[in-house]
Image (cartoon, rainbow, N blue to C red; front, side, top):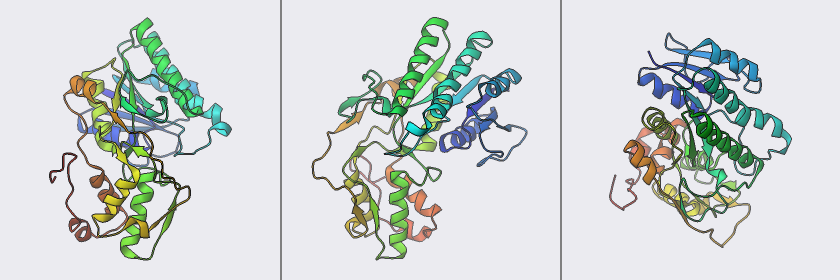
Length: 330
């Protein structure tokens, strides 16, 4: 039986990865900081190991204990927009970068055919994003988090070029689910919408609606990540929906589907009238590599969050139809 290791299995991405790998017949070992698995119950095919990735020796012991075919590093010290990394710089580097080095060294010394998939970030690209973004877009650090992610990308380049380790950077744009942290933008919007449906006078504050983003479904992106590991090792690829939303228009659309005017439910802490430049993520290389890209719409993601928040299924079913990006009903 094929074996896979998932670093960060208790997080959004790691849990969806583990579930997808189990569906495909892998025996999965998941690593997390917590004493217990958060989303998946241990079975004969799923094993949970509590490891602090800041301790390189413990991660190395896990790698020596089992012979893994695939390893996914999706653990990260990461926060929502505006998060301050300065106080936790050392821990962030230990988890986000040095743990990757442990994987690459294990592959170099003991298992050169072990495939490593690293969850990199769109934060490595220059801000503000503009024009077409793809795998050839230059990297430019804009915060301490992006410095670590660029270092990780360079590590993979080095081990792939010099030691032929089959490793991949996946540059992930925003991806959401009911398992996403509550401080992130889309969960905040969904939570406000769910509350407004129950209490029409409810309002909340957001920092700004004046930005652009590419949002996709976390579960779908993680399924695609497994395809990359199986079919296109050694490839660096961007993972996104390929559709860019202007946040204000996205929120307006989400509320309109339920007959609400978002302006009655949101206050902007830092309003601005000057729109940021537009950008589009090109999925040409991803589709050429594995034959598909994400298809799930932002509305379906938010509807799942509403259901999770207790909005009745009948209310969700009665919402206005979801339209595809070309304007046809979905």
